[in-house]
Image (tube, rainbow, N blue to C red; front, side, top):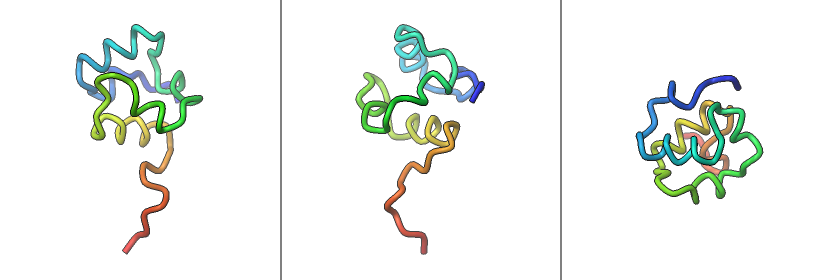
Length: 66
């Protein structure tokens, strides 16, 4: 969980927003549920999937594999 957010190659505006809230590593976002992560200004689905993967979360837990 010590992966830096800058290493995920997020959009610069989102990275700036996350740094303003005090988040510098992926572990800083561990306590936030997925719905709250998606409410962060500038967070797109693509960026959210990168963060979810780094957190070890399944981005779509209800989706069945074919």
